[in-house]
Amino acid sequence: MCQLLGMNCNTPTDIVFSFSGFATRSTEHADGFGIAFYEGRGVRLFVDHLAARVSPVAELIKRYPIKSSHAIAHIRKATQGVVALENCHPFMRELWGRHWVFAHNGNLVDFAPRLHGAFRPVGDTDSERAFCWLMQELAKSHASMPSVAELTRTLAELAPQVARHGTFNFMLSQGDALWAHCSTNLHYLQRQHPFGMARLQDEDMALNFAELTQADDRVAVIATEPLTLNEDWVKMGAGQLLAFVGGVPVQG
Amino acid sequence: MCQLLGMNCNTPTDIVFSFSGFATRSTEHADGFGIAFYEGRGVRLFVDHLAARVSPVAELIKRYPIKSSHAIAHIRKATQGVVALENCHPFMRELWGRHWVFAHNGNLVDFAPRLHGAFRPVGDTDSERAFCWLMQELAKSHASMPSVAELTRTLAELAPQVARHGTFNFMLSQGDALWAHCSTNLHYLQRQHPFGMARLQDEDMALNFAELTQADDRVAVIATEPLTLNEDWVKMGAGQLLAFVGGVPVQG
Image (cartoon, rainbow over all chains, first blue to last red):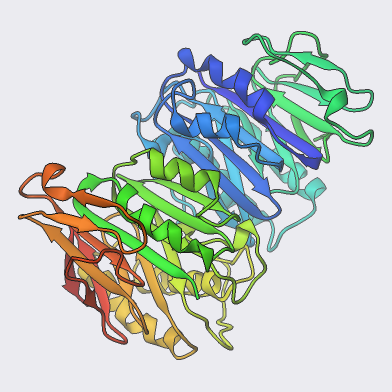
């Protein structure tokens, strides 16, 4: 299975610490990785067919502190689709003049939705097919960009239709909110004042966020499995959809 | 004005040498850069708001020899649109299940085409507007992916309609061909057997391609200004459209 990592915050923040822990997990997830960063409406999307543990691109991300309001990362263990760049998450499409980014953990069986043409998969994964279908149905449901609350309602109707076909843990963003949907395994964490020390589960690395943050900073980190040892990770429920805005989760 | 760099070849080749020369030109083009690489149907798209001369992302590209069949790079000097990530070329959209990549050099005046919805600009440049319009009109002209020859014919009809509004040097690819359209300034070069020594115009750097290539390798390099001193660059004519396939230009 793949693993997901997301970050949403009210002040652009770098994801170096969380990504460093996440990237070490790629021993078991060696079939590529990807990460997308929003800076305003712009997106930096890095994908590599190499494991995050050895990829020069992942090395850059650990060294270049890209400050972002929304980030979504994925390490891949291929279940459907060959090991190729076009099958690496996150996937990106434009809708209503905004870039949308999507990453999925799980496996969908017999999922062959009708795609009418505006959004078609480039690769051959179930995940990109699900993303194209979500985009198509969002485009059908709204003529232009609706509010985050309206989008959450529409996504709450759409997600179960895909989840019928298998495990559908996903993250989605258009730069205003980050939606996280849990089928089986997704945890989140809120970092806010008073900030403390965080210690990575996978690497001998700790960071004192109190030294790096302002009192009103809020950061939400969402991941398949908790990344740190000494923080309060919340396990999401099966079928739960949350929209994270400004570092705070809003129930779907 | 911005500068463009493109590469098309019959055997995946790295662009490190050409990009190194190109990136030094960013002293005068300091408002961001971007480069897209095709590997099969997959695309790596790197953009940065920093100049290519100082960007850590550009540094990665000079060190990580990404082997690609089609590459398009751009260094930006803002004429329209603020300096922001969403205004950095190349731009990317999906059509007919393939990623399309576009970069533009020039300035379009009073160019406000009707965009019906399937392709909308995320940023506020004339260039992304032109790309969205080209994608929209290609989608209207063909129900699914046509041949390169048919696409060239359609693009040859579309390009002059944009070029009426100003300078429209552009490069476009979907991974099967690289189209180059010249309004004012675009040069190309074919490297093929017998390969020789190439010396960069902008940096004290030379490379003996004879040592790095096979006899049947073919590479076409397209750039705003010639990148090397001792090779036969061909200046494209005003209004000329070429499709490069397998390292060879085909007249539009």
